Length: 507
Image (cartoon, rainbow, N blue to C red; front, side):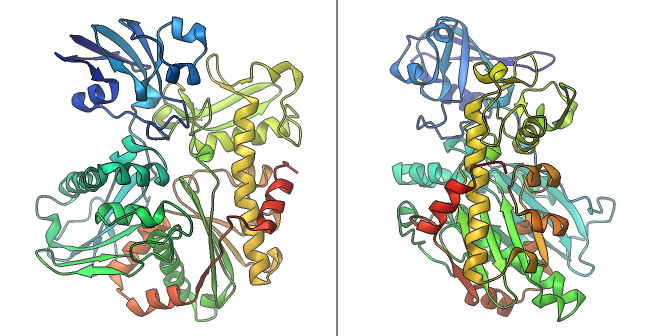
C-alpha cells in the first residue's frame, strides 16, 4: 500500500511517501514520516479542526467525520485526520497549518557572538505546553549567550494540559516523558553540545508539564479538587552537576508562575527595597491564563479557564504560531492589511491576530457589543482573505476566553481589597503576551482599562525566572513566594460566574 502525503501551502510543494503492508492510522503515517501533526484536542473529538483531504483513495466516511464536516466536504475527500484509518493506496493533502513548526519569540538580548566558556555556564529551561525554550547563561556576567526554542512534541497528544493528563492516564505517561526528554536532548546538543548535562540546569514549567517530565502520577490533576503529586521544589545532584525544578503553588499555578514572580521580585529589588513592595498584576497568556495579583505583601493566584481560543484552537480560522499565521492586522475603509509570521502566505490567524481581528471588527462596527456580525456576514463569516473567514461562532469563542480572564482579574482584586487604580504595574507574559497588541487587548476588554497605561510585556517570564535562579539561587525567596501565596479557586464561585456573564460584552 502506497501512501503519499502532500503538504498543501508550501512552495515548492513537499511530497512524502510511505509504504505499509497493513491498515494504518494517519497519525502513525505522520509519525513514521517524522512530520508534526497538530491536533489541538489530542484526538478526543473536541476541536474537530484537523481535517485532511484525500485526492484519491479516501476511506469510507465515519460518524466521526460527520461530526466535523459537511456531506459536500466529505464527498470532496475531506476526513478527520485524528481518527482516519488508511487501508488502500492514497494521496493526501495536509494543510500546512497542521504540520508547521510552532514559533516562539526569542529574547532580543542574546549575545551569540560572545565566546561560550563551557566551564562557566548554566542552563535555564522553560518547558511550556506549546514550546520549550532554553537559554545558556554566563555565570560570571549573567549574559545570555545562546537561546533556542522548539515545539514541545507532546502536542501530538493535544494542545492543552487536560488532553495530556488524559493521555497519561490512558497509558502514555512514559511516552509523554520521553518526548520531552528527547526534545531537551536535541535542543541541548544544538545549543551547547554533547556535554550539556554536566552543567547547572534550572527547569521551569507548569505543574502538569513538570509531572509529565518526571513521570509522576497525574491522577490527582484530572478532577476537582486537583491535587498535585507534590508541590515541593525538586533538586538533586547525581551524574549531573546540579538540577533544580521550580516548585508549583497549586495544580494550575505552576513552577512557571513561581519563576515569573521570582524574576519580578529580583528585578524590583535591583531598583530598591520600596520597589519590591509595589503592587502588580501578572497575567501569563499562553495555552491557559494564570493570573497573580501582588498587593504589596501577599500573592493572590488563580487560573482562568479561558479555553484554547486565544491560542488559535477551537477557532475555524485559527492556527498555532506557525509560519504563515496572521499575527497582526487592521481594517480601514473596508480593506484589511495584515502581516504573517515569516512573511509567508497566510494560513490562518494565531492568537495575536485573533485579538486584532475581533478588536478591528468591533471598531469598524462590523460586530456589535455582543460580538454579532452584521447581516452581510452573518451566514458566511467575515472574509480575512479569499479562503480565511472569521465566523460568528469564532467571535463568541474569543468573547468566552476574554471574559474568563477579565472576570478572574476582577475577583482577585476584590479578594485582595484593592482597586484597579491602585495597581502600579500590569505585567503580561507568555507566548501570546509577548505578541498581542496592547490596544487590541484593551479594545476587547481583555484587561481593565485602568491598567492599560501600566502595561509592560515581560516576554517569557518563566524562562527569565529560571535564568535569574541560575545566577542567584535564592531558595529563601522561592519559599517566601510560596508561603505568601493564596490560591483563589474560581470553579463554582458564584461571584465569578456572575462576572463572567456580565463581561461577555465588548463594552
